Each structure stands twice: as structure tokens, then as C-alpha cells.
Amino acid sequence: MNHTHPYFPGPPRPKSATEAKARNSLRYCKAQGCTEHRQGLDAFCPVHQSVYRKYGHPHAHPIKAAQYTRYRKEVAAVFEVNQSHPGYAAALDYLTRWMHGAAAAEDSFKGAPEIARLVRHGVSPRDLLVEVCAFWCFLQDNPRALPDKRSEDFGLSRAVMHLAPRPRRFTREAVAKGTTGYPLRPKFSALDSLGAWLRSVLASFLVNVAEAVATKETRAAETLAQLRAPLVSPTAVYLNDAAAKHSSPSTALPFTTTPAP
Image (cartoon, rainbow, N blue to C red; front, side):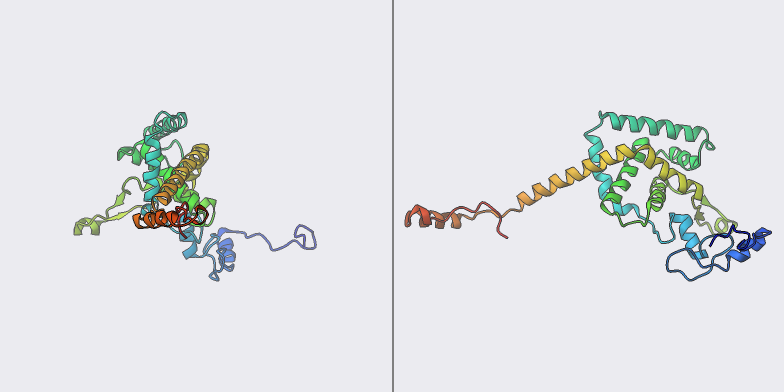
């Protein structure tokens, strides 16, 4: 049905924001499987809207740093033996200038205050690069960890932001009780921009690092399989030699050349 046709003009446009919110609140949440109603002008119900603003998708969830600790160690090892690699040097140089620019002008781009905070806490460009690559390698091995590309970018933003402690807000009650207050949440604009920018700028380098880590893991697995291959016992050798002496060469028992199933 063509709503632009004069006979089918469609529903009239809301005359005010209040009317638009009232009309939108009659619609169901956009999140799959949710039967709750929307709130305000949001596309989701309050619960899914909160998750969406934190993780970039109404059904996403946080990826904890402990989940990709192994990849962090593997990436650091790859960097250690490739310090003169031109791609590694170029990535570090770019991130160094980017981080210094954010520290010098916190309004230079979306998320600059978050990067400036990392600089103030002593996070180096190498630390940031290791974290980004480790998170990327985790995503390559766990493609279903997050529902879509945007939630992956949000996860990458959060991984970088958590390299330093979050700023905290101290209420009067917290000061009176001597507590540590509560951490401030990162802005939606920062979450929505930092991870996507890092992915686009470091795309080729991330693929290269992921391949290097995967190759190292494959070689390690092959070596481990060789070390776990069963050894031939002296008794088996003795029995094999004895059988060879008392029988024809065609019936002699051969040595084991492949691991037993």
C-alpha cells in the first residue's frame, strides 16, 4: 500500500514531542522476542534500551577481560619477536600521536576524554594495541560471542576503556560514610565511536596479528601431539626381535610407526 497516495495518506504526523512519545509507547519493543512496550522515543523497552546503550545490542552482554587473557599473552609474545616489523612500528606510531592528541585536546573527537584518561593513568600505546589485538583474536575464535558487528565495536571500546580505573562520583552520603562512591558509566557516543574507529584504522594489522597467533597455536598443538605420541617399550622391542629370529622376514612384527588409536 502506498501511503503517499492522496487516498491513503497514512497516519498523521505527531504535532508535538509529547504526542510522538505517546504514540511510540503503544508500540512493542524492537528487541526480538520482547513483548514489552517502548518508552519515550526509544525503539526498545526500558530494560533492552539500557542494555543497548551499554553494549550496542539489546541482546549483547559484557566480555570480561579474563575471557581473553590467553590471547593477551599470545599477542604480547608475537609483538616481542616482531619489534622491528614495519606494520607494528606504524601502528604504534599512529596510536602514539592519537593518544597524545586526545590528551592535548579532549574535545578533538568523540571519546577523546576516555583516551586522555588512559594517558593520565600511564597506559602506553603498546598496552592499548595489545588489548585491541587480544580482543580481536578472541572474537575470531568466538564468532558467536556477540550478536553483531556493532556490539563487537562496543566490546572493543569497553576493553580499551577498562585499561585504567573508571572515574568515580562521590556523593555526600559516600563522603560521610568514607566509601569510594560509584564508577561513572562511559558515554554512549564514546562507546559507539572508539571501537569502530580502532577496527577501521587497524583492520589489516588486526588480521595479520590474528593469523600469527593462530599459526603459533597450530604449531604448538602439533608439537604437543608429537610429544603425546605413544613410545615403544623395551619389552615390545625384545619380543619383536625374538619373533624376527624365529620366523621368516615376511612374518616379522614391524615397529610401530603411527600412534595407536
